[in-house]
Length: 247
Ligand SMILES: Nc1ncnc2c1ncn2[C@@H]1O[C@H](COP(=O)(O)OP(=O)(O)OP(=O)(O)O)[C@@H](O)[C@H]1O
Ligand SMILES: [Mg+2]
Image (cartoon, rainbow, N blue to C red):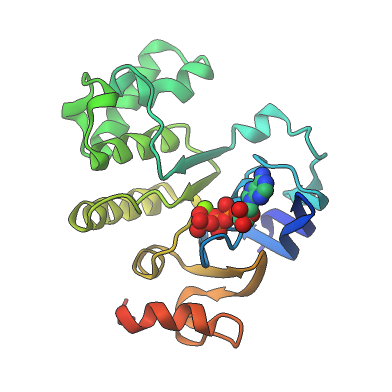
């Protein structure tokens, strides 16, 4: 399969420390790729580099086989990607306004925006919140708005950095179930950073384990989880003590 995004010999350095050292890495069309690893391993940095949100110190990034000049990412390429973070970062204004923002920036006709927002409000089960101020939502509601805002622009790749980790368990599992259905229907390629084996096991079909800025293992999620290698076993086996693997 042809990769959408490829990293070649990527390094990221800050204050003389190497944060990321990735000889090769790809995002392939249609996959739900998980990135998991300990605190400070470099997961968020890798996500930002893949999404062209952080400049690499060395190496090159390709989009559909073409090298993208560092620090000079065309707007049309940026607009193919969406990102949703742990903090929903909603703006002061209605839920409708927050979800519409990507389409407003793209100057879509008002009628189209209204129809599309109504569609995504319904998919995420939040139509009743349309007129509510986004700053007064519960954590679960805010994360639904955040994900709807990221999906409404129909991104080619959706990047997610721990979007469920601040939610209580019942809220998390209901949202994850709804989200999985939505993303499978939309066939969106997704890259998902998480600490949580349960989230990774439920959502992803490929998994990369990153430790100390290096991808130590990657492959189909069930295979990686069932057969950790010598570099990932200590991290994964801690999780597996508390989480029985069942899909
Ligand atoms: N701009 C920076 N300057 C200095 N150090 C940085 C910078 N950005 C990240 N780091 C360091 O790089 C390492 C990787 O950070 P990163 O945020 O990618 O980790 P992470 O795996 O996402 O961690 P967490 O699980 O806590 O979210 C950390 O040690 C962090 O302190
Ligand atoms: Mg992080």
